[in-house]
Length: 115
Image (cartoon, rainbow, N blue to C red; front, side, top):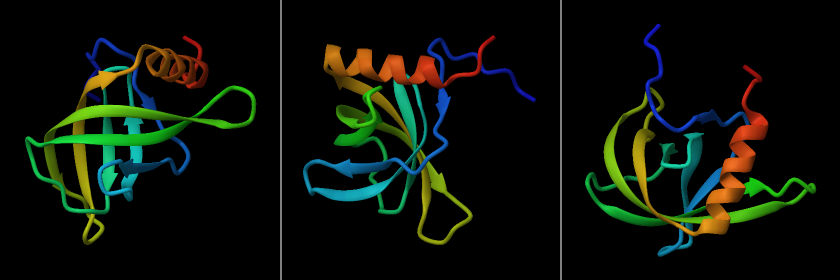
């Protein structure tokens, strides 16, 4: 197994977390994993490599509800998944409001296994 050398802890998202393109208001896929600096999307819509997107996805608020997180992202890479019409897509976060970053950090930290 290759060790994970990323600086930010990455959460493998266990539930179906839909990701919406805020420009079209359409769901373009679901989160595969996420960190404070980027995310892996399991995309169900075609995406343009090296493009910029405005995306939104919900994270638990810690009280039984969800908080919508808005991110400006850069699509770094994409490749076909085994399921027809689906793609793996790697994004880097360009913009993430401070409060949203903190909520995302809390979700990731509370969901990671204790070390």
